[in-house]
Amino acid sequence: MAKFGRQTYNYAYRLCGNEADARDLTQEAFIRVFRAWQSFRPGTSFLAWIYRIVTNLHRDELRRRKGVFAQPLPDDNQPHEQAAPHHDPIEAMHERQLSAGMERALRALTPEQRSVILLADVEEYSYQQIADVLGCSIGTVRSRLHRARAQLRRLLEREHATGSLG
Image (cartoon, rainbow, N blue to C red; front, side, top):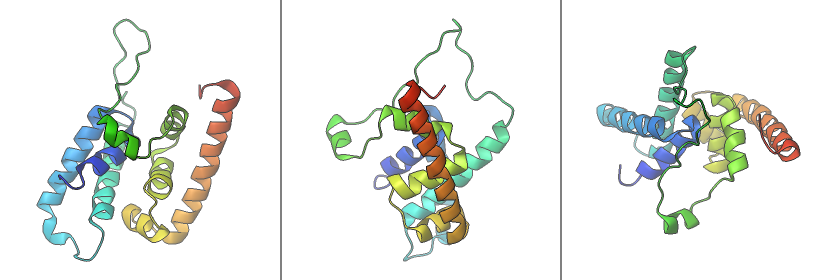
C-alpha cells in the first residue's frame, strides 16, 4: 500500500472522477489484493495487476449503479464544484498533472474509453500491459485506443471552441 497506494488512488480518481469513490475503489482493491495474494504471478507487474482489479471493481460499480444517480442534487439546487484530491504541493510538481479541460474531457468519455486512455497516455503502459489489465487482446486495445483518442480529440476541440463540454 505504501509503495503503490498513491498511483492506485490516482488511477481510481481519474476513472471515477470523485474523491470518495476513488478512496473506496482503492481500499477495496487493496482488500482484494490481500485476499488473493496467492494468485499474483511473480515476475509480472504488480501495478498492472492492481489496475486490473481497480478497473474491474469500477465496472462492477457502474453496473450496480446503472439507472441510479451517482451523486445527490445539492439542497440549494445550485451546481457545486467537486473537491480536488489533496496532494503534497512539492510532490504534485513532480507528477504529471492534467489540465482542467483534459480532466473534464476524460470524465465525458465512457469508462471503457477513459481507462484505455489513462493506461496508454497517462500511465504509459504498453499495448500488452493494457491488454493484461483490461483482459482483452492487443488488437482490441488498439481499436479502443484509436476510438477513445478520436472521441477525446473531438471533446477537446469542442471545449476549445465553446469554452465548455456542456
